[in-house]
Length: 243
Length: 301
Image (cartoon, rainbow over the protein chains, first blue to last red):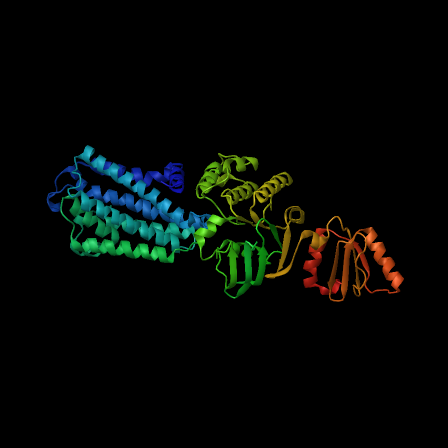
């Protein structure tokens, strides 16, 4: 690991308050939901699945959203606003190196959050581990790339840290809805689900649901998610304002 | 030896504003080169262009033969930069910052030792540093990679006299180790002590490039005699350090002896030149004269 990545990790650990949301909060939310008895009962409306099972991928996506849309945009735009990127522009590390280090830190918080969710689900509420781990991991990784791409795009184009935080929050709330935090996507009425399928987190939620039960995800949500990942990342790279 | 910094016809425009209008600079390897000039003269823009942070509107910039704006990686390995405005991660501590920046280079200096010499507490986070401490940290970060060229914008602005002297000693050491240094300064004392040559910038153009001695005549020439006339037969005056001719104006810098010998010479010739002035000279005077000349030419008669 490069010194710059190690340094960014150390700085992240120095703000434990910021780590709480992507690392601990999703597992805590899953615990609270799991304490509701009816959520632990098989639900015929959900094809015999339990609500708590549906919330395992959802809370993992919540960690992705917390990191990519809540934590990332203010950090990146503050690095520009406080002319940190300008300083790195004078070094062989380049501002790009600092951003990559920050992405690595954020991704690590999400991985930690996801592992915690899986552990709590498995040990606390007897939820099955993902039936198709390969596709599950792949969809998870693509959801990460798409969300970080959107977060990077917001940070790169917002005029100030304040704007980045505000726009990030709006995207954050919208994504929580489409990921199914309030209402699992699988339980949404058809017309609503059809719309949500075309959002990055909605597509990710459906694909992860499938992978959780051991099936390969359908093609449409995977294509939608890929489209978001590629487009958002490309635009973020293209439009990022370094100064 | 070819010049390590070679700037030719550098123009820098931002939208409709022209900040640099055709600058030529040549700095030899190992030289300490000062850039002086009033606010808004284009000093920081020149530094940014030398660092490769700006792509010139026109003209060429070469540092050790490379174009720093086009070849960023090579430029950043070669050039250490202290910018007037540059931040760091707020929670990054002094010691971590110097270690991190040292890690970017193949053969760095002992950054922690440098920081300690400049009185920087290693455990202090960047966000709690005072302006002067940030300034000193910026100097350490610019020098820690043992750069071949160091660009230092407003080297000691905002530092107290003790810190300023410590920084000067450090700069002299770095120069002795072979680094070429370009420094922007408003402190004429600093320029006089450190710089081999100075460029004075005004309104985006180089007004003059000279040695501090050439510019001022320093302590060996505290007296300046100037008059309208010609220079025929007035060389070889005792103690004379420089003889400049600017239009019809002749300016001789030297000692009291120089002044008396010159007056004797003029009297012997029977000439009574117009505008005879005898004054004592400091670098400040020289600089102010140079800058004032531009705005109010009628003062110089």
